[in-house]
Picture 1 (tube, rainbow, N blue to C red):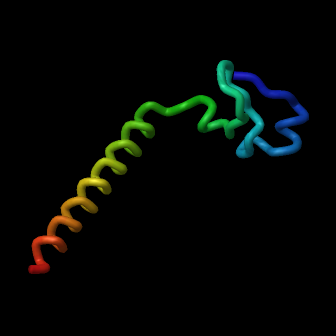
Picture 2: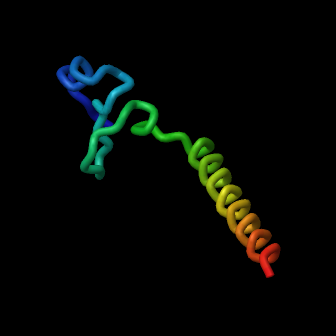
Length: 65
C-alpha cells in the first residue's frame, strides 16, 4: 500500500488517497488495508438477502392462482 502526502492532504485519511499494489484505483484507508471478517459478514448478509427475496417471490407466486 502506498500514498503521497499530497493525496492525503487533498482527500484526507478517510478519502481515496491510498493505492494498493496491483490495483489501479485509489481507496480509502479501511478498504485499502482490508478486513476479511467484514468482507465475510457482508457476503453473508448479501446471501441472506438474496434468499429472503427468493423466498418472498416464491410465496407471492404461490399465493396467486
